[in-house]
Length: 252
Image (cartoon, rainbow, N blue to C red; front, side, top):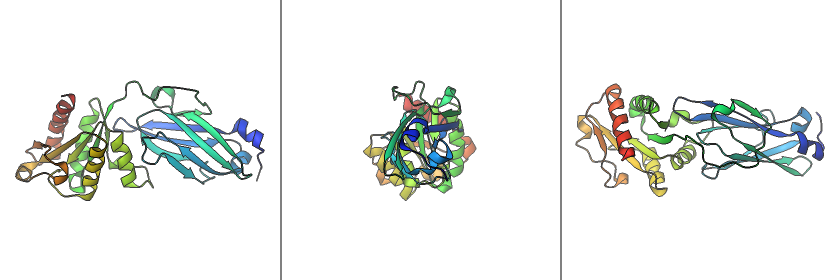
């Protein structure tokens, strides 16, 4: 196993990344520490600092085998900071601008001095909150909305090993609206999603569908918010209708 002197680490250790788009206008991305085997062996742990809008902006990793790799998803570019705690008791700081889109899938060792945190051409984001009973409708609706100017976020985008509630909170805070499918049905997770959205001022759009739903009241969590209603129970038929209704509502 090699060793790494402090001066050497400062000059050669760097942050690398990759990013790939998913089907809903978002990006799955990863960042890790690159360097020689000796340099990486000298690192005890890495603390990643993400954008403050993340529910857990600080992530501490100890896996030398993965090069202290962090994987998650989102749609915005921002500066990532990494604090490297070395085995010799010292620490080093690295910075890297997360690049999405045309900049290429893989970037190595290119720290950025400054850049606006606003991403040009950012698509409006919609978070879908739903139960297992409405999973089929959620999938069809996500496909319909993805054809428009909206990026769609739902639970199938959760990275492996990430706490669902923390991830949901992070995505809701960054969304332009939360669409609640089956708003007249009970559900702990959906109520939690709605409360987060309401506390952060994110608009909530409740949705009911089918002939029975029209006779039931929406969840008390939603207050007096009037739901969008589609009379059909067919996910395939309901999805395009809902996509149009949601689009018109968001555009005012």
